[in-house]
Image 1 (cartoon, rainbow, N blue to C red):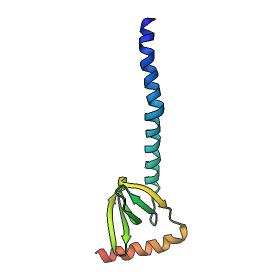
Image 2: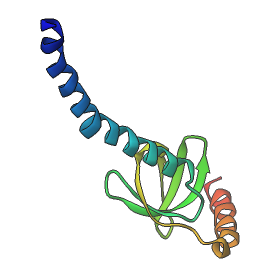
Image 3: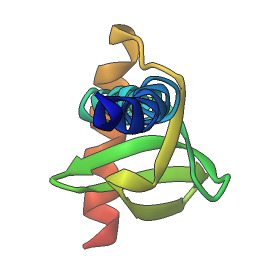
Image 4: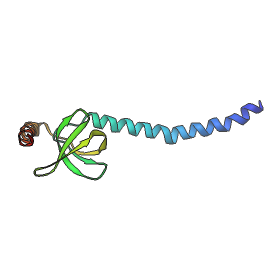
Length: 107
């Protein structure tokens, strides 16, 4: 019975840490991964470095964003901090045309 009283506070402390620290961090990580999986061309995003731009190309784990006219930067997907504005379906045709034009210019 003494062993139970010795172990019980440690179990209680671990339970409190799990509930208040570990669980919310896992939930936040899951939400961030879901956000990264749902990125699409035309979304306005902010990187972890604070750079704002519009996604013009997504390829595997890399994303190309346009920060200004004729200024494109490539990033790793995991460096995206948040999405400021999701792309509306009306702009997708314009974005695809911009992407094709940009690819031709890069070649």
